[in-house]
Image (cartoon, rainbow, N blue to C red; front, side):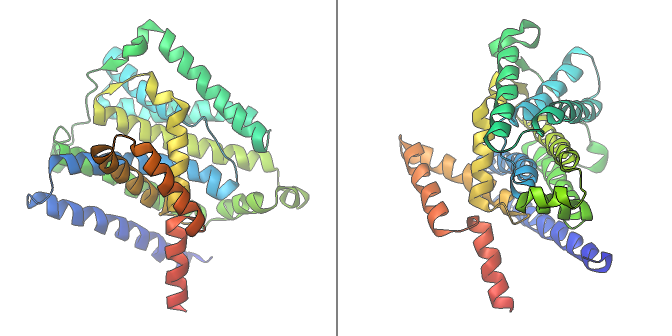
Length: 322
C-alpha cells in the first residue's frame, strides 16, 4: 500500500477513535454518565490496549500466547516499584516499566518463538506462571497483598487532572489512540505484510529467504511492550498491584476479547474489550451465574459471527460499499 493511501487511513483510524472518546466525554461533561460508567470505560480502554497487544501475535502472526499476563504484570509491578520504592516520578516509572516489559519480552521471545503451535502456547504459559509464583512469594513486593499507593502522572499543565476519574480516563484514551495509530502504521508496512505471510504459511516465507523467527521475535517484543503499557495504566487506575495481575486468566480474557471483536480487524479487539467489560459487569449485577450466560454469548459469537463481530461488520460494510 502506498504512503499516499496509508497516511489518510492512519489519520482516519485516529480520528474515529478520538471521535468515540470525545463523544463519550461530551456526555460525561453534561452529567449524563455516572462515575461507574466512567470506570467501566477506563477498564475497557485498558483491556483494549492489552487485547491489541495480544492481537499482534494472534491476528497478525498466528501465535497464541497464554503468558502475556506476565508483561501486563511487569508493566504494573514496574510502575509500582519504580515510583513507590525507587522514588521515580510517575511518568518516568511508566516509561521504565514499558522498557522493562520490552526487554523481558525480547529475552523470553528469543526462546518461545523458536517453538510453534501448542509448544509456543505452553512455553508462554509456563513463563507467565513462573512470574505469578515469584510475585506471590517475594515479600519485598508485598506478596499476596501486593503494593498500594501508586500515584499518577501530573499533567495539570494540559488542563487534565489525572486524579479525577474523567481526567485519568482521558489520559488512558490518549494512549489507546496512540497504540491504534502505531499498530495501523505497522500493519500496512512491509513488516506487517511479512507477519501476515508467516501467519498464512510460515514454511513458504522461510523458503523465500525470510528469517522467520526474527520477525516473530520482533512481533513478540512489540506485543510485550504494549501489554506492559496496559499494565502500567491498570495499576495507576486501581492504584494498587497484586499477583492476580499475572494470573493466566488475564491472558485468557484478553484472547476472548480478541476473538469476540475480531482478530483480522484493527479495531476489533477494542470492540471486544468494550463488549466483554460491559457484558461482564451488566450480567454480574443481574445473575449470580453470569459466567454461564457469558459463555453462551461467546459460543453464539463464534458460531454466528465468523471472524468476530468486528470482522462481520467489516464484511458487511465492504459489501455495502461495493
